[in-house]
Image (tube, rainbow, N blue to C red; front, side):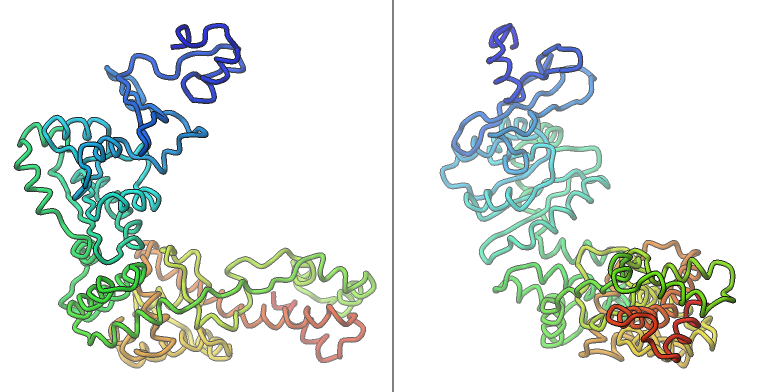
Amino acid sequence: LLNALGNQDQNAINTLTEAGLVVDKTTSGKVYDRFRHRIMFPIRNLNGKVVAFGGRVLGDEKPKYLNSPETAVFHKGKELYGLYEAKQIHRQLHRLIIVEGYMDVVALAQHGITYAAATLGTATNEDHLKRIFRLTSEVVFCFDGDKAGRSAAKRALETSLPQMQDGRQIKFLFLPEAEDPDSLVRSIGKNKFEQLIKQSTPLSDYLFSSIASELDLNTMDGKARLSALALPLINQIPDGVFHQLMLQSLANKTGLELSSITTLAAADSQATPAPPAPAATVESHRNQADNDDLEQLHATAPDLMPGAASAAHFSLSRQPMNEAEQAPSENWLTTKLPLKINTLNKLPPPHSAITMLLHKPQLAHKLTDNQHAILKDIDEPVVRLLVGIISLLQVNDDSHIGVLLGRWNGTDEGRLLVQLAALERLIPHEGLEQEFFATINAVCMLSKQHKIAQLLTKMKSLSFKQLGNQEKEQLKQLLTDQ
């Protein structure tokens, strides 16, 4: 290719490099063809113009497939191999099958199934679906039946939900183990393959089955968790008949009234993210307190235990507190948790503690009286909810997630519990108790951190000398206890 189109013409080489057809090794000064010893697949946009290429090796070399890089005219997250050809064959596309590779598209076309397209090394995304739904109202995702295929299907489900306007259909076809569309259509032929397509699983069925696969829906816990996991997904579906039918289906599966499910769905969709808690920084405090004030602070606390000097410095000049140290936020309770959060590591400590109790209620019995008393002294909504859950679990040995959700059903607390119950527990069972008590200790520190933050905020407008004796003593005591 280089010899035919470029050779020693630098302008031609520059153009070929920009198009991704040749690679310029600036370190060695060599230029060579990107695609060598490969079967070439032209990738056309919807107007039929070739905007990129894909190449498949003939032997066992790696990588097996190689695509053109991103260029000014080619964005792999927007194009689909075979979509232009399918549109040319079918002036009215009744459905489109999304497969994983070029050879799947080619093999299906060889057997008369000429309405398939493949993504170009990426998962199907929002841009793909918007483009597809301009041409057809039915999409069938075709995946291998292995673990990787199931994972890809779940990603496709999440991407598809916001595009599920009334009148559109999305289905999922899972092939037998060790089969792909290429091998299977060669084995069973067109008619049987198309029969599999017609029997593919609708999005609604796949959504519930994928969630319920590890739940026992004969128990209250299982039904509560199904609701907690399904509602955030259903709420991504645009308002309309399909959205309402999904809520009705969830109500049928959980045994709840549709009005209750609708109320929970409305609460989940209307909640808003909480703003970040303010944090003290080194510059904001140094601008308000001069060196004399800092020296007086140390003079008032001469008997601090080892490390107290650094604790005092922490209070006045430390960088923003990390998540485990943040002062309580006034609107924790009414905060909608981000839907993508699926790990306790990203939650504020009170939320983490509640989530662990939902998974293992027995932890409440191992809390000490002193820890319980400290928690009761913290006047924050989510901590009050945490204390209420602990108290309920300590009194009722048989309490479980269903009882807790029922206790706070229809309240802000209940809606928060539904969201927390939906989070995946990634902490191993054997490490859950240790993590729980570390989190409880972090919650107990919140009150102290909050008081320090309040005093430091006051110091922004007053010098240390202007603080009252009681406030100085309080700050000294707080720093001593660090």
